[in-house]
Length: 298
Image (cartoon, rainbow, N blue to C red; front, top):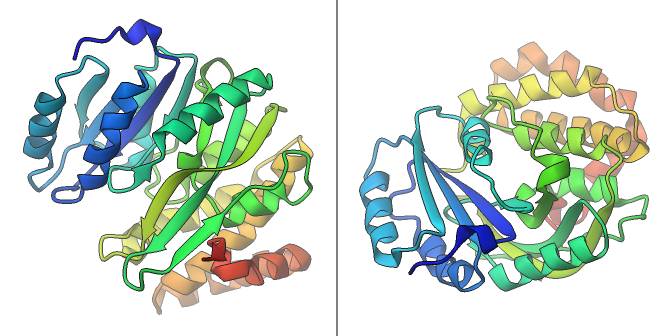
């Protein structure tokens, strides 16, 4: 399928690592992306399984110059995304994970309406599905001017339901951390004083709770704690960015307590407690978030 990449207005960057047998969703929504003329930048962070051969087969099947495949060896989702960002040639970009599902038509519409609204960041709604219980949650952002937006973003994180203006946002990069690197990325963007557009259209379905989920990886949780320590001293000038920083501190502190096993937790527990008591109202809002901070159960 020969299509002109220069006519695309949206790129989706897809980092992939050890995804063998888990790319059926990707294969399904790629069809819609190509029909919408969206540029797909797939970055394979070298795997230990058969991901590469499955990718080669899938890309050969579609045979489209709208699909760009690159290979790296970072073992880091953030650095893998950074590499993909080097190849953005469209006015807008977004991110997606290989084992989730993108509502492509809605995401493209979100991009168009964000641009039409003269905004730099668009945020849509999403579904999240617990793969073990099959429970489905729905999260939709409040209006951009709503004071609760920063709380919503920190407690229902997911860069894959965003669209970003390349001119304003592509100059930033992710850290090498394997977890919570998206929090730092978003905090920097929010501190730009950018215009934000929100919409209740579902643009993404996120699957969580599987055996390969990074939150079950203790070494990855160390990276989350490192990000948390950066957030402690991060300086934010914009009110929404500062509120997001504080809510993120509380959210990440609770996540570390929940997922880090003793005795490692005992070493860092005093720091986590100090974080939680330093912003008690924010901590309570995070703790009392609906449906365990994943949105409303449906």
